[in-house]
Amino acid sequence: MENTGELFIVGTPIGNMGDLSPRAAETLEKADFIAAEDTRVTGKLLSAIGVKKPMISYFEHNKAERGRLILQKLESGQKVALVTDAGMPAISDPGEDLVALCVEHGIRVTAVPGPTAALSALAMSGLPTQRFCFEGFLTVSKNGRRERLESLKDEKRTMIFYEAPHKLIATLRDMYAAFGDRRITLCREMTKIHEENIYTTLEKAAGLYSEAEPPRGEFVLVIEGAPEKAGEEDEEDRFIKAEKRAGELINAGASVSEAVRTVCREFSVKRNALYSRLIKRE
View 1 (cartoon, rainbow, N blue to C red):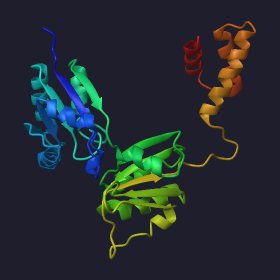
View 2 (cartoon, rainbow, N blue to C red; view 1 turned 30 degrees about the vertical axis):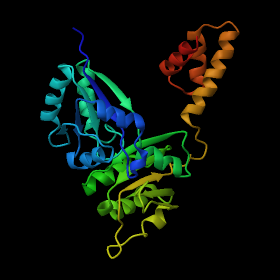
View 3 (cartoon, rainbow, N blue to C red; view 1 turned 90 degrees about the horizontal axis):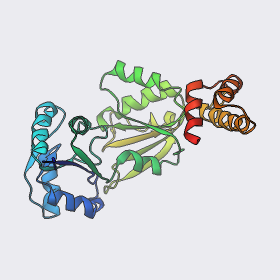
């Protein structure tokens, strides 16, 4: 008999309860049980929408044991809703391990989209949104944090980080030291009563708070990517030009392989990558 178990990844409000979607509420109501980061937090959410369901805690320090238990229930045919305290499960969250476990064992996984702090902050940042990277939380280790930031100093995409208030001052100072003075948007307490967006630069941001006046609330930091170096052309732009030139050669009678060999020398792009792009266009 076909297994009918299913894992629902349910996005929950990041602050404003009104952001819970009707589909999310319906999914929570129909699930056989709910896997929650903190059952007390999820209990308040369920109470607000008038839903009573069995819950099991699933968080960083019990994910291996509880993951196996949840998998057994899914394999028995139960429908499970996975929620985090706020936002989309499996994004900078141990839920990613449960999803991977389900994929490995052939369990159907369905997303019920909801609020996501990273993308909401990016949309409000005023910084380029076409290309971006999500870096999540930095390590609590001072040396590890600085090494990670140093590795990102040449990243040209807009960068998104999560940060807790007690680490924010040190993180901003380290970001300024690693990246120099770039634009940054600090999104604090999004969708909550004290929501605040601060549009500034890293140099100024590093001096916004002090030990006497510490920051409060959860932060999303959106930082401008590294500027293009003089004479440096973006790799994607080179590929676009290379594709166009290769297409002209192919239309003139050259084979794909011949066009790739010629164009790769001219535009300094990787042969296999260009070949794959051209094949997809066929």
